[in-house]
Every structure is written in C-alpha cells, then in structure tokens.
Length: 190
Image (cartoon, rainbow, N blue to C red; front, side, top):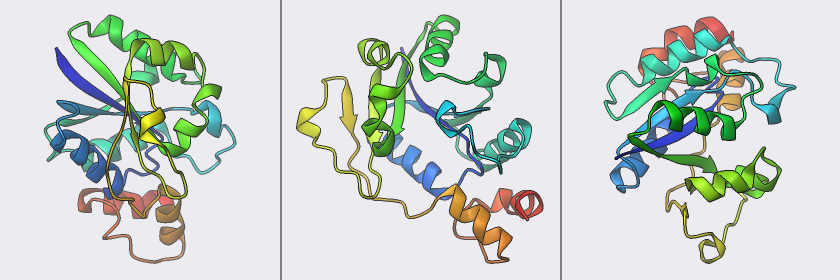
C-alpha cells in the first residue's frame, strides 16, 4: 500500500516552506508521496478575501512541484461539496484510491483546535496524522495518540500572507517561493 500524505491548504501561494516541509516528511520515511490538496474553501477561513481562484492556485502549485516527483498538486476537493471538510475529503479519497494509506499532515496550530474539526474523532480513529511544528505552539509528543506523530523539523519563517504583503509592497519574494511561480505571483498578487 502506498503511503500518501495529504497536505491540504489554500496555497495562496505555495511557498518554499511548504515544499521543504514535505521533503522532510518524505526524507524521514513517514510517507511515499505527498499530495498538496488545494482547498477551495477552508471552513475555518471563510472570511479570507484575498484568495485567488481555485484554478490559479492549483496552477501555481503544479508549477512549483513540477520537479518534485513525489509531490503532486491535487484538485480533489474542487469536485466535492463546499465547504471542504477534511473528514469528507479523506472518506472520498479512501473510496476512490483503496490501494493507498492516507496520512493527514497538519500544523501544530491546527492540532490545538483539532477537536473543533468536523468529525475529528472519526479522523483520529481511521487515519494517521503527522503534525509539523508552528511558532509559539508547544506539543508534548508523549501525550499524542499512537497514530499521531510529531515531526522533528525546523520552523519555517515564511507564510503565504507575508508573501502576498511583500508583493503588494514591491519587495522581493525570490527566496520565499519557487522561481517557477514568481512571474505569476507578481502578476496575481500586486
């Protein structure tokens, strides 16, 4: 069974921190591949107003990952009811791809509010999770359920919000996002 990490997000835009984190999970042997599932509408971010269209974010994510054979941009949630609930996504993926073991990838900030997620206990009962560190969030690995792993990874000091702001201010983002998406990012976020 292929172990497939599910890394969901707005990817507005995808940045080098996202890719470096996925690479660390792959290098650590936690999964065989990572699917970057571009989310059309995060139920916890309904107020976001600077979200590019689904297609543009997917296009940039695909461009950013074109030289990463173990990382795949996915539009799976585009074809599901909105808003996008992770439980429903995982259920639909499991039905469509029974030959894969799906592993949910979330940040420490999301782990803190995980009980608020739709069907959070069902997710825990049926899937493994990998938590990546976030600044200011302390998680005691000894308190985690057996199917939840805390990734020992550095903190990546970059965010999509920061990138959008830097572009609006005319500042360089060349070290923050893949070179392949710089022209589109500059075009769409100005």
